[in-house]
Image 1 (cartoon, rainbow, N blue to C red):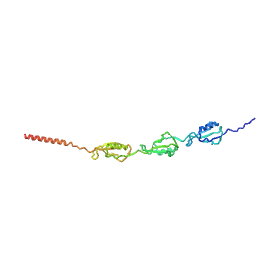
Image 2 (image 1 turned 180 degrees about the vertical axis):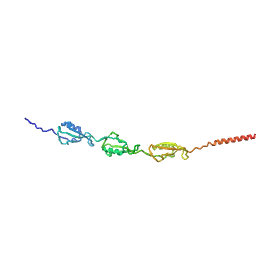
Image 3 (image 1 turned 180 degrees about the horizontal axis):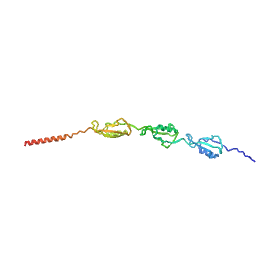
Image 4 (image 1 turned 135 degrees about the vertical axis):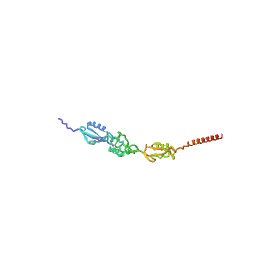
Length: 250
């Protein structure tokens, strides 16, 4: 009778697989006799290891394992951590910053620009990346545009100017205008020129506001037509006197 004594299951010494492609290592291990179900993959985000490459392994390199009995677990990089950009429109700058840093974004990655707007001061009016776009947590620079409130401008000095010049100055300042004629006559300001403006010159108003401009009618015109009838009357009297004289002579 011949007796055969088992030397146990075949064992191999594990290589160091860190940094290699998981798909390549998996194929090698299957070729060495490992069942595919005994090769485990756990995904983990990493800024340093390329997506699909091995971050770590268990058992460690140098350990002896049995392809027929043992399992090998690999942590595999899913690439840098990322998320879909949220919609921060209308939020305050402080709240948007807090939301981003809570997602792991470093404060140095958040850039803020200020722009005049009709929206409340301090609120977000634009963002980049846009809502839904991918943000790589440790790499993407995020730009927030924050409202600095409505742009203001001072009413220019236009009293004494012609209506055309006044309208041009107001348009240049970003203001609308409405013109009205003065009720009475004005001996001081020529007709067609500005008498007063409301709001007054130097007043700070929102860009796009309407300024009311009053235009002079000029001085009251002279009425010399009353002298004509008087002259006619005198001529008539002279004619009558001449007729009477002539009659008396006869």
